[in-house]
Amino acid sequence: MPATVLVGMQWGDEGKAKVLDALADETDIVVRYQGGANAGHTVVVGKERYAFHLVPSGILRDNKVCVIANGCVVDPIELVKEINELRTRGVKIDSTNLQLSDRAQLVMPYHRLVDQLSEKKKETSGAGKIGTTGRGIGPAYVDKVARSGIRVIDVLRPSYLVDRVRQRLTELNPVLIAVYGHEPLDANKIADEVLAAAQPLKAFIADTAAFINDALAHGRRLLFEGAQGSLLDIDHGTYPYVTSSNATAGGAATGSGVSPKRIDTALGVAKAYTTRVGAGPFPTELKDAQGDAIRERGGEFGTTTGRPRRCGWFDAVGVSYAAEVSGVDAIALTKLDVLTGEKELQLCTRYKVEGRELTRFPADIHAVELAQPVYESMPGWKESLEEIRQYEKLPKAARDYVERIEKLVGIPVRYIGVGKSRDALIEKK
Image (cartoon, rainbow, N blue to C red; front, side, top):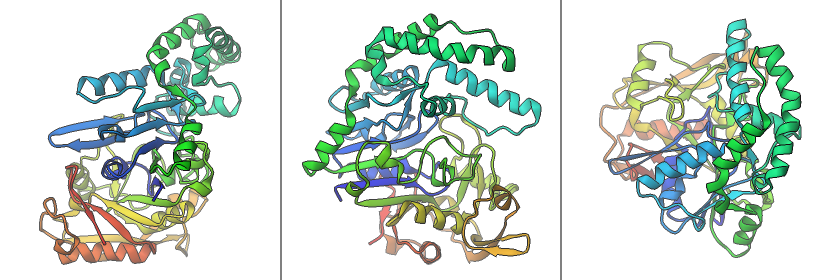
């Protein structure tokens, strides 16, 4: 498979980094195609736990090239911090194994400020906050679309960058004063801060679209990595409770500069249950002790924010929709081990909304909020799964659960996560 896109099929946090880390061993290049430092991907190697935000987790593998592509928004301060933290832990990172797109947009200090002020104002006014990470990702994408953004390439022309910051603050400062009661920002000070922070990144800046297309032309194997999940996609998710970019498979083409015809396979990642961070509808959410127990067993706390994740049963309506939108060929089902000990498991097969039954995920946010899940019960299992590495050795109830998900979604499960360790991944043949 020369080019595979790895896409989340729920509301993010599906365990994409674990799957990517396993697949990266048979890959030459890993490409992160959207999102920013609001993402949090975790990989456990032995007793070591690595948290990734912008750097693709494939950086842990030798002789792999990792790319932060043009669809990403990059906070230079956070990226340098992440690189330095990984280096202190013995991870090799230099221009031979990490490239940063010259066309990626920068997350500026005022983006973080506006993000935080906006969320606070919404909460105070009762307008209903989105539940962002406060890292400036949304405002950075807003500026990108409004053509007011600043790109990575601009750090190589400091005078131009200063002019761009000055132009942006001419518009933004009156808003900061009038809407948020905040003092105006100094353009020179902000430009100097960003240029100083970006200095160590200059060695990584490259025309990554040219690099990726050349690699494909020479038969190298690529793995495209998305952040967040399909139900958070700006176009296809639970709008307005979504991220600010295309987290579905289509984002891999626009977010990296390759033709969609060059991507051969889409591998969807879904948890054996469902989680969500922040605000927004969640039909299968468990607001009880059972949900709390799943959260504790699964370690469901945000890698980026530390916030507790909302937990609930597997939602085949949402996952089937995500599979359709991204053209998913196979599923990696993660964290099956977390369900060990549950006497009875529930699978949501459809929704009831105002007297109607729906099997397709609705666009109407109010319908998703009103949706009552229709469940199908299955027996659980007591046996630990963490040491199992062959599908046939899973308890029958666990195999039945996996196979029922396959039937409901209509797509085969190829990989099954059964523990935290790097090798705790079963390939189902």
